[in-house]
Image (cartoon, rainbow, N blue to C red; front, side):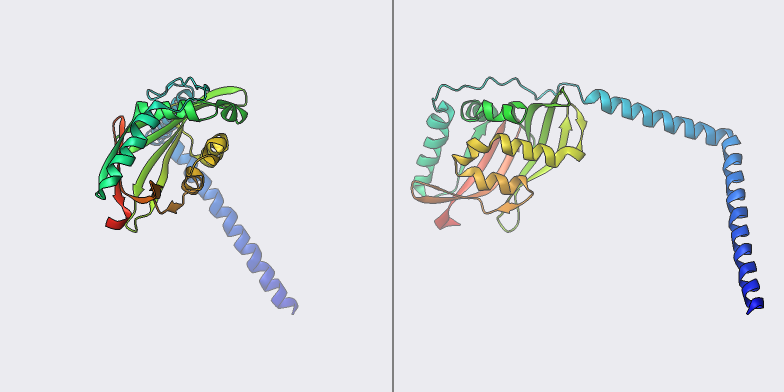
Length: 253
């Protein structure tokens, strides 16, 4: 037994010694590599590039994106004329024929609806202001101003709405930005903050469950009722400054 113990102890010491030697030689190889001029140059350039990218990212946090707009919320109790004189009549008139139809929404018109029907006080309670949308090719930019640690940031959620093969509507958040820099690590916090700020507006409309499901990466059947008729969203197209929604009456679906 004593002999076996000595043999095992010797093997263990031998293995440990080998590891120490291997680490030593690896360290020596690293030292030799640093003495190589090309290796040093690559390391210095890489470190410089990483530092430059970090500086640019940090500076970008405080820049104002081109799509940002200052919003003056209107609390006079009047309904948006874009909603009452364009959206609702278009839906009412075009749905009478029982045929597929397109509803074209302008960026300016939707921002008028937001300015008149979103409660600015609710937004301020979660440190949000200047909420607006911008329509770009295949993207909807939801933008607002927020305060974090006493510093103002302009935040943007880049949304990509669409209809999947099963006819379900989704609203993918493809990017989250502060200024011009991406900040994916605060995506869930920002989505929650926006939903909380829109709570009063959403609770007074049929869009409440719709928005909450979509903001949580869910999918929902896009069916709406108007004039006792069901309209199904068949397709959504986002172009510069406009959003095109194709509706399909339920009987034609």
